[in-house]
Image (cartoon, rainbow, N blue to C red):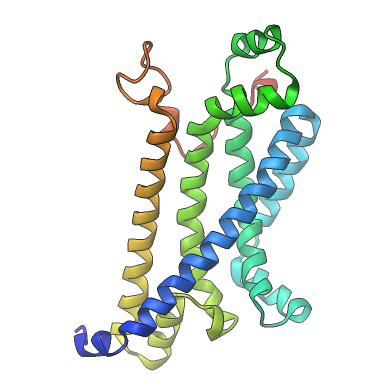
Length: 237
């Protein structure tokens, strides 16, 4: 049974924890995106570093979240850094894979045309490669955002101060109070769904040519919804 009176009495706390959950997610996703973008561009320019980067990211991704948090506590204490660093590290693998795949999806003739028009490397990246890579980049962003929202619920094991909605899940478990558990779990799910819908809408606005009827050839509508990045061109052989 749901104790609706408890929910009504704790609306300010629920709102505060929801905001905190979003803040922790935003910090991890934004920092992870910036770091991964630099690594992805480096991988595209220096293809030999792609394999080691993905291998390192895969190792980090396989480390259980509780073990990662516990390993940082003796170093950084029960602080915001301890909560955010593992969340950032978990974003790197998915971000780098999808970003590199996005850049690799840009047709070679388009790149050659840009070079023929006199675009310098940095100019070509921002004006040609990045816009065409947006569908796969946003696909990775969607996966990372949803997974990070789920991982934030684990930060409550570090400290009540950084638990987000996971605070209610853990507190409800310790008190054997299902209402708290359901409150934290349901709101976390709703946040993940809402974030995914917002990103889908943002992607459609940023890539009008990828919408049905938005481009003459009707292409590029598929990759935007793919969560798995294809193999880079240079490794396909």
